[in-house]
Length: 353
Ligand SMILES: NC(=O)c1ccc[n+]([C@@H]2O[C@H](COP(=O)([O-])OP(=O)(O)OC[C@H]3O[C@@H](n4cnc5c(N)ncnc54)[C@H](OP(=O)(O)O)[C@@H]3O)[C@@H](O)[C@H]2O)c1
Image: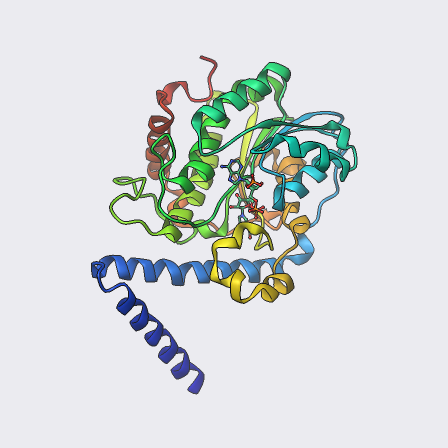
């Protein structure tokens, strides 16, 4: 009883302080921000519990992939580095898309089979850079077996990219959506029936409280950085499902998956108060980047997933995803808006043009 009262007092006091600090904003925005803050804590706590409950499921035996080709965005740090380490260990050739390709030499020296690691410049805040990256990859490699859309950012102030897209939406969703479009023709010709090529979108349990702001996708009217992160991760999950459906309908040998890597101790949390005040909690209770990479590698390699395209994976099993993410009308609407933002007709998505 006293615990319930104490919790109620803390929550009420917190809400009152929050309202006072934001009293210049309309009440509906204050309430929406509060809801997102609380729901996000809930999603994070749920993610942590999921990681502990399914600890023993988060395992992988790497196959021998015999110099197949993987493209990974990001990877100079965080979970991406460990995904690349795993792909190289499985004897794949890996092409990284990173902002500082000169880092590839130092990185490759720390990895088994590091001589099979290459990098081209990629800045996901620029669609021009995405196009240039895809051209560089396709000039050198005609086959692509796996695309891992890993790079990401979380939170920050409101800013539009040079293409006029909200930054988190651009880095996490739209640029990956564009890259997938540009590489899909190669992924399609590489995949075979029974051995499909794979697109792996690294999303997050943070998608759960989210919705797509269809009428104001850049959130110009009112920017809540938490809602924007949630929207971008939800968009990645919905896109994996929708593109997988389109590919199945046209009979293409490419499968798409969405993966929540777990709650992982990385620089992603650099803009959070949590990292500032409780770094020891992150060190103690969060997954290591190596463990965070496992579900992503599972989505890249697991044979049983061949008949399970569009799956949302967490700790190497199907994760709990929001009802919103499964709504096919919402998925389609997002797909059309995303095509608009990259400047293509939705009928030509993923096709050679
Ligand atoms: N950590 C978690 O608990 C957690 C939970 C759920 C989902 N995720 C997802 O996991 C993925 C990897 O995150 P992480 O935890 O490894 O974070 P991280 O350590 O901060 O790494 C983020 C990576 O994204 C790259 N990146 C950021 N902005 C970029 C841009 N404009 N162009 C190209 N690359 C860019 C970074 O490259 P630079 O080195 O150049 O900055 C870095 O390699 C993200 O998609 C994230 O949303 C993480």
